[in-house]
Image (cartoon, rainbow, N blue to C red; front, top):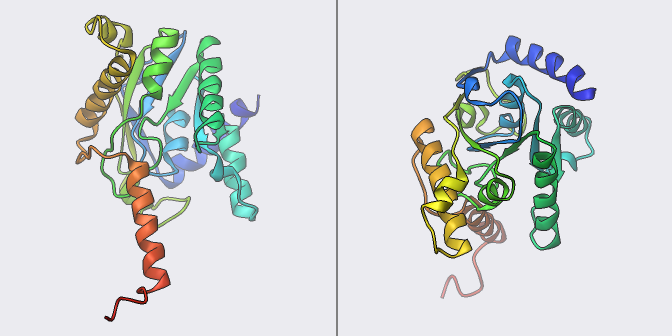
Length: 244
C-alpha cells in the first residue's frame, strides 16, 4: 500500500523538478518474474527508474543509504522504502547470502527485481565489470533479464549526495529481454563459474550498447577501495621517510 501511495507523489514531484524520461517499457512483461539489470550512476537511479515503470520494482539497495540519522537521511530512507528499495548489507559472507535470498524471494513471488550488477555506483561515470549475482538470480528462477541504461544521472548528480541538478535530464532506456538459460545451454559442459561469468558479461555488453559509457574491466568496488586508500594516505600526510 505504501508503494502505491508514495510512487505517484514522489514521481509527481520528480516530473516537476527533473522531468525524467524512459523508453522501452514495452520490454517488461505484464506478469511473471523479471529482472531489471541497470548501470548505476547515482542515488537517483533508484527513484527515476522504478518510478517510471508500471509494475512494482523491488530493488536491492545499499544499507548505508538508510543508516543516516539526519532529517534529510530519514526523508531519503523513507522515500526509498516507499519505492520498495530493500536495504542490503553488501559486506560479503552471510550478508551476501541474505541478499541472494531476498532477491530470490521477490522472483519466486513472480515480481520484478531491480539489481545493479556493478554492485555499487560508478565512481567516475564509466561502466564497470558486473558481478555474477544477476546471473545467479536468472538461472535459479528462469526470470528474463531486461538490460537498463541510465543516462545523464552521473552528470546531474556529480558532487551531490542525494538530489540531482535539473540538467542534464535523466533518461532510462530498457533493452530487449535476455534469456540466461539459453546462454547457459550454448556453453554445455562449462563449469558453473564460467556460465555465471558468461551470462553476466552478456548483460554488461547489452547495458554498454544502450548506455554508450566508457568501459572498465575492473570492479567498481575495487576502484572505490583504491580511491579511499589514496585519499586517506593523502590526508595523513607523507610518511617519515618521504624527505630522505
